[in-house]
Amino acid sequence: MVDFDESQRRVLDAPPQARRIVVAGPGAGKTALSVALIGEIDATAGAAEDRQILFLSFSRAAVKAAFNAFGSIDGDYRATISAMTLDSLAWQLTETDPCTDAVVPVDFDRVVREATSQLERRYEGEFDGVIHVIVDEAQDLALARRALLCAVIDRLPEDAGVTIFGDPLQSIYEFLDGIANHTRKSAWDNLLDDLRARSITTILTLDGGYRARRRGPRKVAAVGSRLRRATADDQVDLLDDLVSDLTHFHLTEFAGKVQDWAGSTAVLVRTNAEVALVFDYLSRSGVRCRWRESGRNRPFVAPWVAQLWSALGGAPVSQENFRDFAESVDGVDRGWFRFLHHSAGSGKTIDWRAIARTCARAEDTSDPWFEDFGNAIQVLTIHQAKGLEFDNVAVVGARSILRPPADREPEAELLFVALSRARDKVVVINWEPPYTKHAAGSGRLYVPHPAHDIPAKIFVTPDDLRLDVQIGTAAGQAALAEHAHCTDLEFELLSSGGAEWPSYRCRVDEEVAGATTPQFGMLVARALRMQGQSGRWPSLGSVPLDGVESTWSQGVDVRFWLRPRPFGFSDVCRER
Image 1 (cartoon, rainbow, N blue to C red):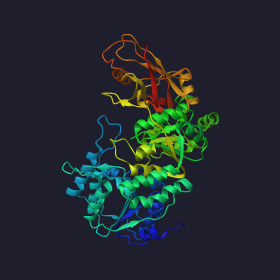
Image 2 (image 1 turned 45 degrees about the vertical axis):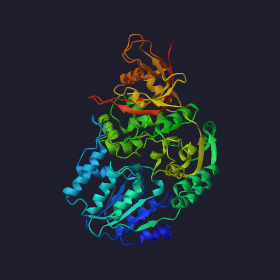
Image 3 (image 1 turned 90 degrees about the horizontal axis):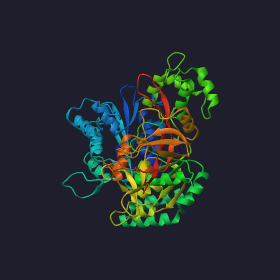
Image 4 (image 1 turned 135 degrees about the horizontal axis):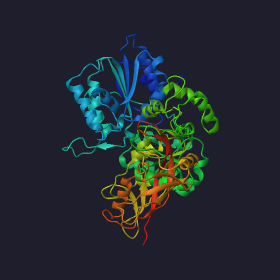
């Protein structure tokens, strides 16, 4: 039984029809309160089958946390509990297929606008059974999603309640809502205006701080209430004092200490370019890192799946041959056969096409055939970290976020979001990143040569390797399985002379394990300003591996193999 404080009780004790805004800072007990609130509202739902409580969020991270907190929603509640992002709600309302593999990129804002228009013009009773809407992370709703939320509120029954959680201090996006409106206004202020127009004016504040467990995070939590009352200039000064009082490391020092830290650790940076640079540096320093790929919905399929296919030669999976495989491979539990059979099996064996379908659906990312990041240090942007929390957090370049160059405004909210992700330890990393540029045409990140603008280092990602077919022999697959982490991918130049672009074979532990795509070769040619020429192509230096994943063919015969995931900067070595 959770012992709620007075500020939380004010939310729980209100009637289920109440409509209010709840300001909830980081670690204020919002998740536990949401679960309790759903329980309180559900108790009043009655026995009607169509009663629904709708939980909406700005981010997938918040929805995932909600699912984990709600537990077994089918058996524990009388009403239907639906948790989703506003984008997912838009897909459902428009009955659009959210296929991420479409050839034409999906315009998510267009789908959201269509859903809003549909609710406004031809409402079909989708929310007639809703008794309460809970909205999380509302401070960063842009115009399209804010309009959808307002359209939902407009269609609720008169006796349906609304609880909107948000925190203006964590509003790290700003939007210009119209061409004629050149006044920059925070998403939170725009949301408050829209809610006032719907007579939602009650604002409650959660006072507790339950995330912070040790000295550093507690300092951050203590500053939060003062920041909310401060002017923009005073916010910068308050955070400046806070940052000065935290432990500081140079990146080299941090690399030598971080692997001894207990629990989950995140390294937070401002930009995607800094993710690549910090990941590259830490990986080459022997630190096992992972990066969070922006926009990726599917988890990585664990290496043992492809190893199982190889061990069985593509034969169907039985309980007996899975047991033999599990006994020969570290980290594989023989009990996983039960889970795999439940998801993909029919009869006594499991067909590999069914396994491929199960991996593609990715209905439950906690299934053992999906890769677990474990205790690897995650390198991600502050925006990606919203809604997440970690035992340890290292914020890179806090001073430049707070007191940036003349062409940027101070980002006090962004820095506060970063510092407030930690439960036990929060530190600051002082680091000046190398100068980077984006290549014209491709936008590829590179580090220019100090004497001219030609790339001295070029950024390499997993998408630069061929995915359609296995490259290399069984020896290469074995090398990938053995060196899945903390190793480098080597590049061997295959074509030179008259070729229109360079091609590279990839090796791990001297074994062939992949090859670059033609698109990557053309990208290198453009970046070096050699497009349309035929000359001596450069060799490329090694790149750290983010990891190894299982992938599979899409043809008649399903085949699985291991694919390396390079992530980092490769030295461009041109012969004179």
